[in-house]
Amino acid sequence: MAVEPFVLAPILGALHAAGIPGDFSVASVRQVVSSAMLAEITDFIRTFDRVSEREAWRAAALREAQPGAQIRPREVCFFSAWDFHLPPERGFKLIEFNDNGSGFLFAGIINAVCREAEPGSSGIAPPPSVAAFRRRIGDLVEREAIAFFGELPADLFLIIDDEESLQRGKFRQELRLLRDLLRERGWSAELARPGDTRWNGRRLTFQDKPVAFVVNRSTDFFWRSGDFAPLRTAHAAGRVYAAPNPFTYATRSDKRLLEWLSSPEWDGELGVEPGERRMLSAHVPKTRVLTADSVDRLVRRKLDFIFKPPHGFAGRGVLDGAAVGRARLRKLLRRGKTYLAQERVARPSLEVDGVTVWTDLRVWAYRGEILAISGRASRRTDRLTLTSPGGWIPTYVSL
Image (cartoon, rainbow, N blue to C red; front, top):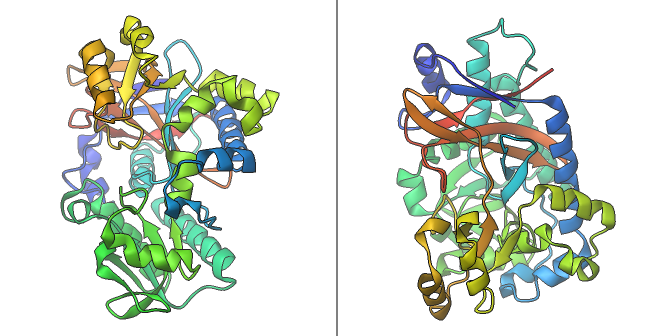
């Protein structure tokens, strides 16, 4: 992978005109991933999908899951995101998976606008234009809707997120872009909080309009709050499409599953085949759920680990190994806090405007096919700090 700086200032206006908000940081570096690496990442994602869709895996993952997660939906999320670190020496390592991966529309815009600013660049596969990428997203939504209902529904397409995210979240503008994209296809689409919905005994509604299709961006992953009661009822009745949902979270996104992905100990129970194990072990860093019996062993190697909560997001709750000790870890356990210890994976670093940043790779895929790629340049090694001169970075594939 190659990472190199470029001049961002002349194209900031074009980025903002295309929908990137002024408070969203784009770093003045680009990265180019080899086509061979992207092909291997595609094989890895297909392995991930195959393993996590196996009945033995799902049954084990659901054993202690919330009741709402037991519902077996037909939905396939179209913005699933795999986050990778690319060690400077070679290869790639999966850090986590999100069925709720923000940034896919922003990534498409950033890649297209930054590439168009340098049309003479050789050796890089041209990314889709903004218009082409938006059409592709619309086509995927249409495909999912028809697969679920048998036809394209006439009722409302609803994008839901929590109040704070809708008002002040970094991706609030992306939600508006998605709503506008759906409207441009001729569909009725709105943004709402989960608590704005109602169940009328037959249908999920928003402002008295029936809802058919829900794009869920909330971080209440198991729909525990009372605000989700109408959606829980509608989803259990099979009356509404909703992705992601508690089932997809419990069987794919819960970070505790990284322990199973990283180690062969449970392969027999989970049905993981030898070839799949080789792929998983090569690209998933060792991850362990913290227990009273493992604290002493992990503390002895604490500088080799990052400690993270299984249901965290946006870096919340992440602890660098240097910042924890035996007493702190035991205190977390006594308080009933679940934590994971994940082996630290190095990332490429470079200087931007005299500041060192560390880069990663985010890949969105749908039904085993790459939908979009992007990257982040963070000012910290232990979590994502995407303030300038860090931020999201245009990412391309070599020819």
